[in-house]
Length: 115
Image 1: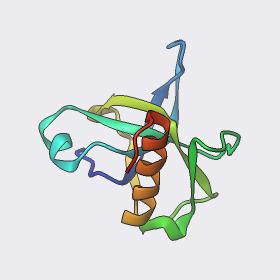
Image 2: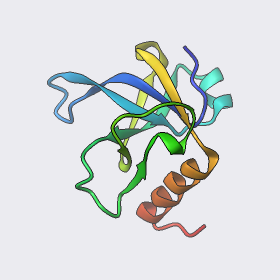
Image 3: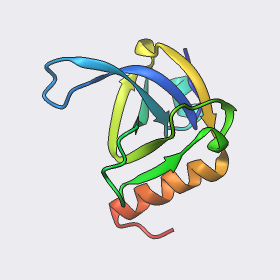
Image 4: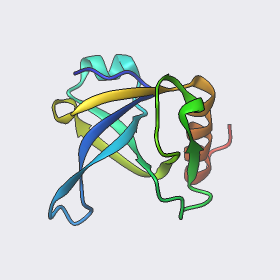
């Protein structure tokens, strides 16, 4: 399944020690054109734990152009992964452009870039 930039999808995400994985939602960061050409996509973790202030962007169903999100969650700009598109379980939403720009802004802050 080829995902588009801003999509929210369910994928098995590996633990940091690679001992196992667990199905988790992610937000697709890589461009749609990249995702069409590559077997891999760049994603950010989507979590219900809001314990990482300054590194997250809060999102709710109102921040989705498509789909629904329950409960409210955060996009973790500090938890990035490159994953094979073959492991996507399902797509269940898409961030609004405004919410996506907030995620990119948070990522820029973490990288020390100014926008």
